[in-house]
Amino acid sequence: MTRMKCETVRLTERRDLRNDYFSFTFAPFSAADKCRPGQFVHLKLPVGEVYFRRAFSVASVDTAKAELELIVKVVGRGTRILAALRRGDSTNLLGPLGQPFKPPRKRERVVLVAGGIGFPPLLFLAQKLITRGHDPKHITFFYGGRSRSDIIERNRIRKLGVNLRIVTEDGTLGEQGLVTDPVKVALQDHGDNCRLFACGPEGMLKAVNELGLTLNVPGQLSLEAPMPCGIGVCLGCVVPLTAGGYARVCCDGPVFEIGEVAL
Image (tube, rainbow, N blue to C red; front, side, top):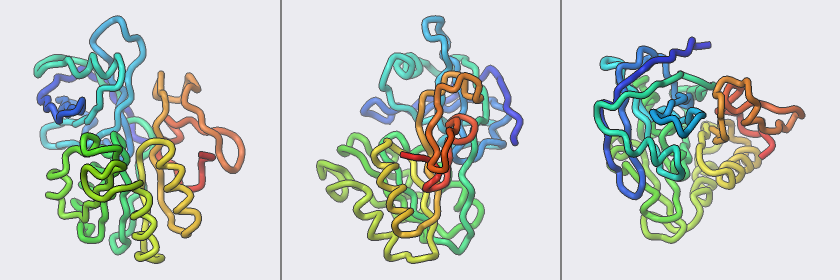
């Protein structure tokens, strides 16, 4: 298990991605090179009115600069405070935390399914796979949202050379419908030589989980849950397991095997 670090860092870059999405780059973080796709960090908000840290998946790292990027959507008080940070501001990071994705074999076709703000850990995974020699033409990145405003960093994904498939429920960008509909077709086409990874809202994860089980496609899901402590102490993020018992999303996950969690 990677030893976590708790360090004060500075905001070195802030990008407004529009529609309440922001990219934040923090440095220096000495454990940036230890972060793996699927893991997260716990960020302390620099104000006294919010007691608990906030958990955010790692979107990318620059090991040479000891930089770590988080991509965040403003949805409540904590993320609104984070969005108000400016370049040069300081905060505290704890991480890396949680279990990462298990990389597929190089010859396997990879299907990534991102829903809304669930896209950052899959962006990181795609980047890592390509860096390690995985053929980007064998990676299909399905990206779903309610409308075009939920689909961000499209050009960044395309530059990786992967097959990007955008699906919106209202049809304002890409294909219209639920993202799991074309995913099902792709899984059927790829056959046995395929591995599935997903992160997004619970309903989407439940549908992806059922597809994996029905079509006998192995893979992993990254779950979202409230994580007040981030290290398995408070039990605020437990989920039921199909085999019985419970798991803590923060330390037993957030990445679980398809079929492992009772969604």
